[in-house]
Image (cartoon, rainbow, N blue to C red; front, side, top):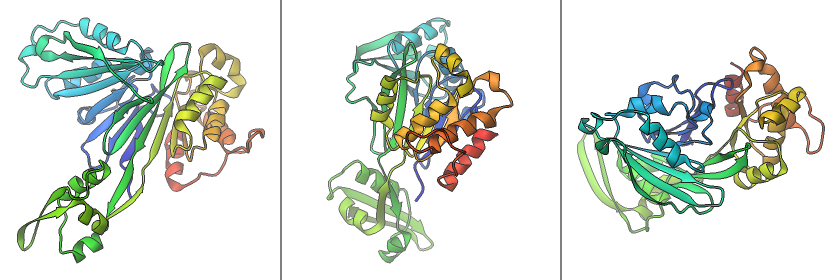
Length: 361
């Protein structure tokens, strides 16, 4: 059963942090962090519907202009979510440009910008090209339990960690996976078509069993149409499985408070993308920079019970020494609780091994 999420680091472990999450079959994608995104072609940027920014340091936010330039006149809406003061920061970026012609663009762009603070409060505002990106609709944005996005197929939650400035860690959850049992589909005399996607979404959204589904398909005998209910079809042709959970944590100190915040958000994640900026031998430098060492990142991954780990955000000082950082993360992640770091652990599964292979490139 294929997962909904197809995550990939835009710049590998050594460049600016940016995690592109393609949503299979949905013709859309999410982006976690917005640093250098030059490696993403326009077709991928245009798939984005939501961008989540951990904090506004340049290597996490400087790609805003690149993204804006691509989506102008091509996309009608984009949601941007960040931490405290994020709406103001986006407004300042927009105010840096002259917008005397954008109101005439054939496709008007609306930026829906949201800011979430550690105390749970939130603000939101919109900026439209029709008005030259003047701030509009400023209002409170209620956020419960750190849930920044809640849709039938997925949920995005956040927690605030300390980087000597508030920084958001993210959990992207696939609510469930629904697989079509094609043998049972054929036994019912039904064919595949867009109705299957509508059925999956209705089921995952909790639609009542009597909700009608218009079943349409085409085969060699022509066009067919039937009316069935969600309950009848789901029981007959769908198999449900647990969804995938992806964690993303970057730019944080190795403190008890931060580890507790991550534990509350990311315990048991399937894949953890975590900063591993310095080797443990340079722990003093990591502390001065408010970053994790590779060993500390591996310890956090072990504490969380992460099934797989992908390190990122390596310091430029380790150019050509990527393998050392990876080995240190894996040793700490694979060590027994309370034990000294052991030799690099074997991959948990083939999927994870591919992630580590990419990290080593």
